[in-house]
Length: 181
Ligand code: HEC
Ligand code: HEC
Image 1 (tube, rainbow, N blue to C red):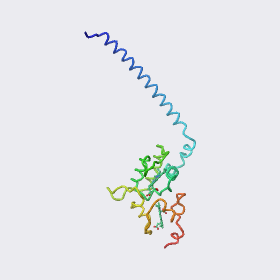
Image 2 (image 1 turned 90 degrees about the horizontal axis):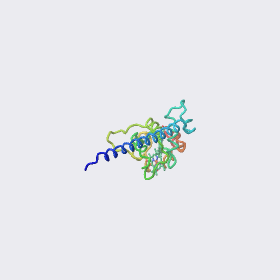
Image 3 (image 1 turned 135 degrees about the vertical axis):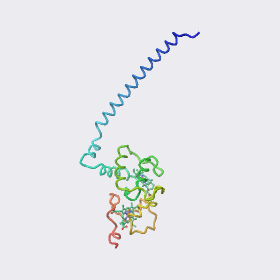
Image 4 (image 1 turned 120 degrees about the vertical axis):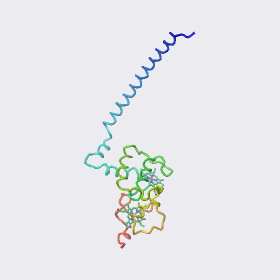
């Protein structure tokens, strides 16, 4: 026969479990929240310094870009690739040309993005494929009106004509080009 009192008893203990679980969840969440507050209130001194209000976030983004994106190859001038390329690369640091970009925390990602989108332009032809190599980029050709490239273009070839490239200086040209008409 159907045993009502047993069922009620079961239900009562069930709701007790529910209340205990909710209490535990609330407790955990509040601990997590407190942790977040503590971390948020005390960012590393270097970060605090780089976020001084008298410097624009784009400038900070540039510094973080150079330090994050120059470990394995030279830091690439943002204007030689379309904005879409930079966006794809920043969104997929773990899939980077067969390797992965380490230490790309969310805040760096946001600041680098701020810098790269400020100094690059959207893809020229709508629906054109996103170039993942400088060699395929229209903008690379546009910033080089005088240059006929015959050698393959890689991150290693920039230094031939841009001797300051290690210091992210693309203004200074090799003597040969500096003197060219
Ligand atoms: C762990 C090493 C590493 C780091 C750090 C790194 N890259 Fe790369 N990157 C590579 C490798 C490997 C290639 C493949 C081409 C090569 O050998 O130069 C590449 C290629 C590229 C290319 C294509 C260059 C071309 O040949 O046309 C771009 C653009 C690029 N990286 C952007 C970035 C950006 C943006 C960052 C920072 C968010 C970054 N890279 C950080 C390893 C790295
Ligand atoms: C064969 C020589 C040569 C090579 C290689 C070369 N450049 Fe250049 N680059 C020039 C010259 C010359 C200019 C000045 C514009 C012109 O006269 O066409 C220039 C201009 C630029 C500019 C504009 C600089 C400014 O004053 O704003 C950027 C950015 C640039 N190059 C990036 C690159 C990158 C990135 C690479 C490597 C992937 C590269 N260049 C490889 C010769 C070269």
